Length: 318
Ligand code: AMP
Ligand code: MG
Image (cartoon, rainbow, N blue to C red; front, side, top):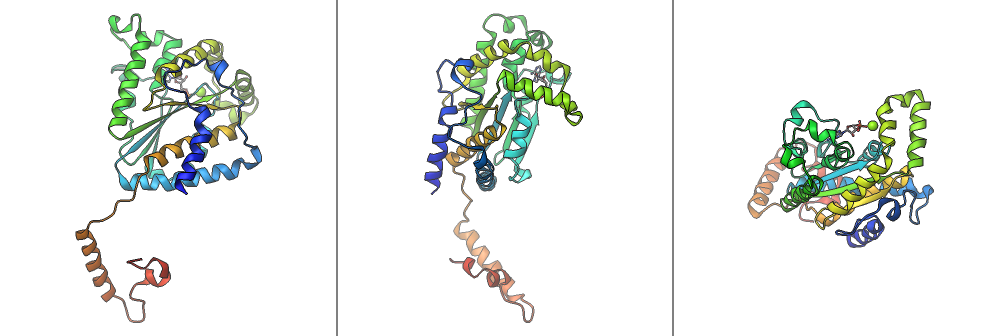
Protein backbone atom coordinates (compact mmCIF):
# COMPACT_ATOMS: atom_id res chain seq x y z
CA UNK A 1 0.00 0.00 0.00
CA UNK A 2 2.70 2.48 1.07
CA UNK A 3 4.79 1.38 -1.91
CA UNK A 4 1.97 1.94 -4.36
CA UNK A 5 1.31 5.35 -2.86
CA UNK A 6 5.00 6.21 -3.07
CA UNK A 7 5.18 5.14 -6.71
CA UNK A 8 2.12 7.18 -7.65
CA UNK A 9 3.53 10.25 -5.93
CA UNK A 10 6.95 9.79 -7.54
CA UNK A 11 5.32 9.59 -10.95
CA UNK A 12 3.20 12.67 -10.32
CA UNK A 13 6.12 14.87 -9.29
CA UNK A 14 8.66 13.57 -11.82
CA UNK A 15 7.89 16.21 -14.52
CA UNK A 16 8.48 18.94 -11.94
CA UNK A 17 11.91 17.76 -10.91
CA UNK A 18 14.97 19.52 -12.35
CA UNK A 19 17.34 16.80 -13.51
CA UNK A 20 20.69 17.35 -11.78
CA UNK A 21 23.22 18.62 -14.27
CA UNK A 22 20.64 19.80 -16.81
CA UNK A 23 20.65 23.32 -18.20
CA UNK A 24 17.37 25.07 -17.41
CA UNK A 25 15.78 27.79 -19.49
CA UNK A 26 12.77 28.62 -17.36
CA UNK A 27 10.67 30.23 -20.08
CA UNK A 28 11.27 27.32 -22.47
CA UNK A 29 11.25 24.34 -20.13
CA UNK A 30 8.48 24.95 -17.61
CA UNK A 31 4.90 26.07 -18.20
CA UNK A 32 3.36 27.99 -15.25
CA UNK A 33 -0.10 26.82 -16.38
CA UNK A 34 0.67 23.08 -16.54
CA UNK A 35 -1.74 20.93 -14.54
CA UNK A 36 -1.15 17.42 -15.85
CA UNK A 37 -4.38 15.44 -15.94
CA UNK A 38 -5.79 16.95 -12.77
CA UNK A 39 -9.13 18.71 -12.58
CA UNK A 40 -9.93 21.51 -10.22
CA UNK A 41 -13.08 19.77 -9.04
CA UNK A 42 -10.98 16.91 -7.62
CA UNK A 43 -8.47 19.23 -6.01
CA UNK A 44 -9.86 19.64 -2.49
CA UNK A 45 -10.20 15.87 -2.03
CA UNK A 46 -6.62 15.33 -3.27
CA UNK A 47 -5.21 18.06 -1.06
CA UNK A 48 -7.10 16.65 1.92
CA UNK A 49 -5.53 13.22 1.33
CA UNK A 50 -2.10 14.79 0.94
CA UNK A 51 -2.46 16.77 4.14
CA UNK A 52 -3.50 13.73 6.19
CA UNK A 53 -0.60 11.74 4.75
CA UNK A 54 1.72 14.55 5.82
CA UNK A 55 0.26 14.57 9.33
CA UNK A 56 0.81 10.83 9.68
CA UNK A 57 4.41 10.96 8.50
CA UNK A 58 5.26 14.08 10.47
CA UNK A 59 4.16 12.27 13.62
CA UNK A 60 6.52 9.40 12.81
CA UNK A 61 9.34 11.78 11.93
CA UNK A 62 8.99 13.46 15.33
CA UNK A 63 8.75 10.13 17.19
CA UNK A 64 11.84 8.71 15.52
CA UNK A 65 13.79 11.92 16.19
CA UNK A 66 16.60 10.99 13.80
CA UNK A 67 15.90 12.87 10.58
CA UNK A 68 14.82 16.44 9.94
CA UNK A 69 13.36 17.99 6.81
CA UNK A 70 14.02 21.44 5.42
CA UNK A 71 11.59 22.75 2.82
CA UNK A 72 12.83 25.82 0.92
CA UNK A 73 10.17 27.84 -0.86
CA UNK A 74 11.17 30.36 -3.48
CA UNK A 75 8.99 32.43 -5.80
CA UNK A 76 8.61 35.83 -7.31
CA UNK A 77 6.31 38.26 -5.49
CA UNK A 78 2.69 37.02 -5.45
CA UNK A 79 3.89 33.53 -6.34
CA UNK A 80 1.78 32.03 -3.54
CA UNK A 81 4.34 31.03 -0.89
CA UNK A 82 2.22 32.09 2.09
CA UNK A 83 -0.95 30.39 0.85
CA UNK A 84 0.96 27.22 0.03
CA UNK A 85 2.38 27.03 3.55
CA UNK A 86 -1.03 27.74 5.09
CA UNK A 87 -2.82 25.03 3.09
CA UNK A 88 -0.18 22.33 2.94
CA UNK A 89 0.71 22.46 6.62
CA UNK A 90 -2.89 22.88 7.81
CA UNK A 91 -3.18 19.36 9.25
CA UNK A 92 0.18 18.84 10.89
CA UNK A 93 1.08 19.20 14.55
CA UNK A 94 2.34 22.81 14.98
CA UNK A 95 4.92 21.57 17.50
CA UNK A 96 6.81 19.77 14.78
CA UNK A 97 6.85 22.52 12.16
CA UNK A 98 8.77 25.79 12.21
CA UNK A 99 8.35 28.44 9.54
CA UNK A 100 11.09 31.04 9.07
CA UNK A 101 10.52 33.99 6.74
CA UNK A 102 13.56 35.79 5.42
CA UNK A 103 13.31 39.50 4.65
CA UNK A 104 15.87 42.18 3.89
CA UNK A 105 18.80 41.25 6.18
CA UNK A 106 19.29 43.17 9.44
CA UNK A 107 22.53 44.90 10.41
CA UNK A 108 23.39 42.00 12.67
CA UNK A 109 22.78 39.50 9.88
CA UNK A 110 24.91 41.54 7.46
CA UNK A 111 27.73 41.38 10.01
CA UNK A 112 28.08 37.62 9.43
CA UNK A 113 28.78 35.33 6.48
CA UNK A 114 25.84 35.11 4.10
CA UNK A 115 24.69 31.65 5.22
CA UNK A 116 24.71 32.50 8.94
CA UNK A 117 21.11 33.63 9.31
CA UNK A 118 19.82 30.54 7.46
CA UNK A 119 22.00 28.16 9.47
CA UNK A 120 20.63 29.62 12.68
CA UNK A 121 17.06 28.70 11.66
CA UNK A 122 17.64 25.10 10.57
CA UNK A 123 15.20 22.47 11.85
CA UNK A 124 16.14 20.08 14.65
CA UNK A 125 15.92 16.31 14.25
CA UNK A 126 12.31 15.23 14.12
CA UNK A 127 11.19 18.64 12.83
CA UNK A 128 10.05 20.03 9.53
CA UNK A 129 11.55 23.47 8.92
CA UNK A 130 10.06 25.68 6.26
CA UNK A 131 12.05 28.52 4.77
CA UNK A 132 9.71 31.13 3.32
CA UNK A 133 12.42 32.55 1.01
CA UNK A 134 15.75 30.99 1.81
CA UNK A 135 19.50 31.05 1.29
CA UNK A 136 18.66 31.12 -2.42
CA UNK A 137 17.90 34.84 -2.11
CA UNK A 138 21.68 35.15 -1.89
CA UNK A 139 21.94 34.19 -5.58
CA UNK A 140 18.64 35.77 -6.66
CA UNK A 141 17.82 39.22 -5.27
CA UNK A 142 21.49 39.74 -4.42
CA UNK A 143 22.45 38.85 -7.98
CA UNK A 144 19.78 41.02 -9.61
CA UNK A 145 20.78 43.90 -7.27
CA UNK A 146 24.55 43.54 -6.75
CA UNK A 147 24.52 46.59 -4.45
CA UNK A 148 23.40 44.03 -1.84
CA UNK A 149 26.88 42.55 -2.04
CA UNK A 150 28.29 45.95 -1.02
CA UNK A 151 25.96 46.03 1.97
CA UNK A 152 27.17 42.56 2.94
CA UNK A 153 30.69 44.04 3.13
CA UNK A 154 32.12 40.91 1.55
CA UNK A 155 35.89 41.37 1.03
CA UNK A 156 36.93 42.49 -2.43
CA UNK A 157 38.49 39.14 -3.36
CA UNK A 158 35.30 37.19 -2.54
CA UNK A 159 33.14 39.56 -4.51
CA UNK A 160 35.02 39.51 -7.79
CA UNK A 161 34.43 37.41 -10.90
CA UNK A 162 32.97 33.99 -10.26
CA UNK A 163 31.09 35.07 -7.15
CA UNK A 164 27.82 33.34 -8.20
CA UNK A 165 29.58 30.12 -9.19
CA UNK A 166 31.28 30.11 -5.80
CA UNK A 167 27.99 30.71 -4.03
CA UNK A 168 26.33 27.84 -5.94
CA UNK A 169 29.22 25.61 -4.92
CA UNK A 170 29.03 26.73 -1.26
CA UNK A 171 25.27 26.16 -1.18
CA UNK A 172 25.55 22.70 -2.78
CA UNK A 173 28.22 21.71 -0.30
CA UNK A 174 26.24 23.06 2.63
CA UNK A 175 23.16 21.10 1.56
CA UNK A 176 25.28 17.98 1.07
CA UNK A 177 26.63 18.37 4.58
CA UNK A 178 23.07 18.69 5.95
CA UNK A 179 21.85 15.69 3.97
CA UNK A 180 24.76 13.58 5.20
CA UNK A 181 23.79 14.46 8.75
CA UNK A 182 20.18 13.36 8.39
CA UNK A 183 18.57 16.59 7.22
CA UNK A 184 16.76 16.21 3.94
CA UNK A 185 16.61 19.40 1.90
CA UNK A 186 13.58 19.85 -0.39
CA UNK A 187 13.43 22.83 -2.72
CA UNK A 188 10.35 24.19 -4.42
CA UNK A 189 10.21 27.06 -6.87
CA UNK A 190 6.68 28.35 -7.46
CA UNK A 191 6.79 29.31 -11.12
CA UNK A 192 4.40 32.16 -11.87
CA UNK A 193 3.72 33.71 -15.30
CA UNK A 194 4.19 37.42 -15.86
CA UNK A 195 0.50 37.92 -16.63
CA UNK A 196 -0.68 36.00 -13.55
CA UNK A 197 1.62 38.13 -11.40
CA UNK A 198 0.02 41.25 -12.92
CA UNK A 199 -3.45 39.87 -12.16
CA UNK A 200 -2.54 39.15 -8.52
CA UNK A 201 -0.96 42.58 -8.07
CA UNK A 202 -4.11 44.22 -9.47
CA UNK A 203 -6.22 42.28 -6.98
CA UNK A 204 -3.96 43.42 -4.12
CA UNK A 205 -4.38 47.02 -5.23
CA UNK A 206 -8.12 46.81 -5.91
CA UNK A 207 -9.21 45.12 -2.67
CA UNK A 208 -8.64 47.22 0.49
CA UNK A 209 -8.19 44.10 2.64
CA UNK A 210 -5.36 43.00 0.32
CA UNK A 211 -3.58 46.39 0.16
CA UNK A 212 -1.19 45.44 2.98
CA UNK A 213 0.21 42.68 0.80
CA UNK A 214 1.32 45.10 -1.88
CA UNK A 215 4.36 47.32 -1.79
CA UNK A 216 5.68 49.78 -4.35
CA UNK A 217 8.85 47.66 -4.39
CA UNK A 218 6.80 44.87 -5.98
CA UNK A 219 6.30 46.79 -9.26
CA UNK A 220 9.93 47.92 -9.17
CA UNK A 221 11.07 44.30 -8.95
CA UNK A 222 8.62 43.35 -11.69
CA UNK A 223 10.48 45.67 -14.06
CA UNK A 224 13.45 43.36 -13.62
CA UNK A 225 11.39 40.31 -14.68
CA UNK A 226 13.87 39.10 -17.31
CA UNK A 227 16.82 39.46 -14.95
CA UNK A 228 15.00 37.36 -12.36
CA UNK A 229 14.06 34.71 -14.92
CA UNK A 230 17.73 34.54 -15.86
CA UNK A 231 18.89 34.35 -12.24
CA UNK A 232 16.31 31.60 -11.53
CA UNK A 233 17.36 29.63 -14.61
CA UNK A 234 21.04 29.79 -13.65
CA UNK A 235 20.30 28.87 -10.05
CA UNK A 236 18.10 25.89 -11.01
CA UNK A 237 20.79 24.65 -13.42
CA UNK A 238 23.59 24.92 -10.87
CA UNK A 239 21.95 23.81 -7.63
CA UNK A 240 19.62 20.93 -8.50
CA UNK A 241 21.71 18.11 -7.08
CA UNK A 242 21.12 14.38 -6.57
CA UNK A 243 20.97 15.00 -2.81
CA UNK A 244 18.77 18.11 -2.96
CA UNK A 245 16.94 18.48 -6.28
CA UNK A 246 14.78 21.44 -7.25
CA UNK A 247 11.12 21.09 -8.13
CA UNK A 248 9.58 23.71 -10.41
CA UNK A 249 5.91 23.91 -9.47
CA UNK A 250 3.50 25.54 -11.94
CA UNK A 251 1.98 28.33 -9.87
CA UNK A 252 -0.63 30.06 -12.04
CA UNK A 253 -3.30 27.84 -10.55
CA UNK A 254 -3.10 28.01 -6.78
CA UNK A 255 -4.98 24.74 -6.26
CA UNK A 256 -2.52 22.86 -8.45
CA UNK A 257 0.54 24.43 -6.83
CA UNK A 258 -0.69 23.39 -3.39
CA UNK A 259 -1.29 19.79 -4.44
CA UNK A 260 2.19 19.66 -5.95
CA UNK A 261 3.84 21.07 -2.84
CA UNK A 262 1.99 18.57 -0.62
CA UNK A 263 2.95 15.73 -2.97
CA UNK A 264 6.63 16.70 -3.01
CA UNK A 265 6.82 16.93 0.76
CA UNK A 266 4.86 13.70 1.24
CA UNK A 267 7.12 11.92 -1.22
CA UNK A 268 10.19 13.08 0.71
CA UNK A 269 8.77 11.81 3.98
CA UNK A 270 7.71 8.48 2.51
CA UNK A 271 11.22 7.99 1.16
CA UNK A 272 12.70 8.74 4.59
CA UNK A 273 10.23 6.19 5.97
CA UNK A 274 10.50 7.22 9.64
CA UNK A 275 9.47 4.52 12.11
CA UNK A 276 7.98 4.70 15.59
CA UNK A 277 10.65 3.62 18.07
CA UNK A 278 10.10 0.18 19.62
CA UNK A 279 11.04 -0.58 23.19
CA UNK A 280 13.67 -3.15 24.19
CA UNK A 281 13.09 -6.20 26.40
CA UNK A 282 13.97 -4.36 29.61
CA UNK A 283 11.63 -1.47 28.88
CA UNK A 284 8.91 -3.98 27.99
CA UNK A 285 9.35 -5.67 31.36
CA UNK A 286 9.05 -2.29 33.05
CA UNK A 287 5.86 -1.59 31.12
CA UNK A 288 4.43 -4.93 32.26
CA UNK A 289 5.29 -4.24 35.88
CA UNK A 290 3.73 -0.78 35.71
CA UNK A 291 0.65 -2.34 34.14
CA UNK A 292 0.30 -4.85 36.98
CA UNK A 293 0.62 -2.08 39.55
CA UNK A 294 -2.02 0.08 37.85
CA UNK A 295 -4.42 -2.87 37.46
CA UNK A 296 -4.36 -3.35 41.25
CA UNK A 297 -5.39 0.27 41.77
CA UNK A 298 -8.76 -0.11 40.01
CA UNK A 299 -11.51 1.28 42.26
CA UNK A 300 -14.49 -0.87 43.21
CA UNK A 301 -16.72 -1.47 40.19
CA UNK A 302 -14.30 0.04 37.64
CA UNK A 303 -12.79 -2.09 34.88
CA UNK A 304 -9.22 -3.18 35.70
CA UNK A 305 -7.98 -1.71 32.40
CA UNK A 306 -10.44 1.01 31.32
CA UNK A 307 -8.63 1.56 28.01
CA UNK A 308 -8.69 -2.12 27.05
CA UNK A 309 -12.35 -2.31 28.07
CA UNK A 310 -13.16 0.43 25.55
CA UNK A 311 -10.81 -0.90 22.85
CA UNK A 312 -10.97 -4.71 22.89
CA UNK A 313 -9.03 -4.81 19.61
CA UNK A 314 -5.98 -2.99 21.08
CA UNK A 315 -5.30 -5.29 24.06
CA UNK A 316 -1.61 -5.72 24.87
CA UNK A 317 -0.01 -8.63 23.13
CA UNK A 318 -2.17 -8.21 20.01
P1 AMP B 1 8.22 39.64 1.46
O1 AMP B 1 8.65 38.20 1.48
O2 AMP B 1 7.31 39.97 0.33
O3 AMP B 1 7.72 40.12 2.78
O4 AMP B 1 9.53 40.52 1.14
C1 AMP B 1 10.76 40.28 1.66
C2 AMP B 1 11.76 41.10 0.88
O5 AMP B 1 13.05 40.83 1.40
C3 AMP B 1 11.80 40.80 -0.59
O6 AMP B 1 11.71 41.95 -1.34
C4 AMP B 1 13.15 40.12 -0.78
O7 AMP B 1 13.72 40.40 -2.03
C5 AMP B 1 13.95 40.73 0.34
N1 AMP B 1 15.07 39.86 0.71
C6 AMP B 1 15.00 38.60 1.18
N2 AMP B 1 16.24 38.10 1.38
C7 AMP B 1 17.11 39.06 1.01
C8 AMP B 1 18.54 39.16 0.97
N3 AMP B 1 19.31 38.14 1.35
N4 AMP B 1 19.07 40.32 0.54
C9 AMP B 1 18.30 41.34 0.17
N5 AMP B 1 16.96 41.33 0.18
C10 AMP B 1 16.37 40.20 0.59
MG1 MG C 1 6.20 40.80 -0.96
